[in-house]
Length: 403
Image (cartoon, rainbow, N blue to C red):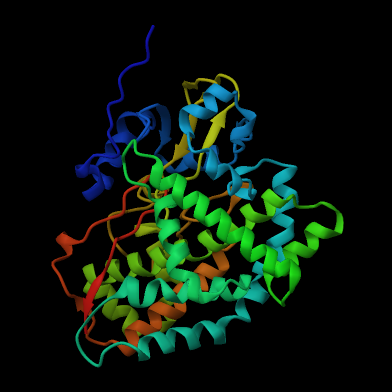
């Protein structure tokens, strides 16, 4: 018997404008829903309820390592060979490989080390705001939300900051590809990014510095703990994930506050609420839409659905964070919401390593914005704002503000 046709089109223009209505239907009608991928139109599965998402994120029956699949299954979803030189990192691996890779970078993101970055993050944010025109309009994403975290992660890794526009363009192509069968832009971005990282790593091998990249190279040289491809992939992951999450957390968070002026004024009046406010921003409009891919290595039953061998399964974090069974009045932005056990940074062994850094950057950036720009407002009708395409990232293309 052939599989039923999918009932939900997550990639339609309507769903991009109002995904929460579609997710509400999915949670009610098909909490483990069969859909088609946006480009190749091959079957995959989306989990939409909170408790089911928690279960999936901890279910070791599904692999993160696409290379464990049969070649024909892998190639149904991944047809860009050039990406394989930059995707062998901890986010795409299972234990024991995942354990080995994560341990190499975990010390860079401890609470103590992250807290030590506070003065530098504040200094960068202040400098960016000082460059704003004395009155008028800016694209907050372009002028503030992007350069702040990209400067922080570039300094941590030792990547030249003047190259930020280059790797930003490649990142946007790789993380939010257009819904098209034309894979040439993906190939070119992967080739350029790979070559850039290999050249950068060659310079660091020749001249080590006091940065995280040099520490990873030293670990590689001490006993083959990292292969050359793993090293390139890890720097790629840290560079991309190290800024993408915070860019969209800050931008989405300000968007949410501007849409809820009573919450904005409450936070401006009591900056001590910033910690719970950022947690609510993560829940309400978090920077990640879907989890990264997991795969069934054999036919696997999950919550009454059989996921055929080789097929992809993901969870919608945006949907899980709006599940009314977990969050009373989930459509309401409440910067004092408690408890607030959102899943925006994932769960289980793949919980986001950079979560403490993203939280700190967002808290400092948003409080400073409210302090420095007391009359901040939308510069365009919010209905005109466009959200990025792609399965992974939930973020605006731009956020024009007036002040």
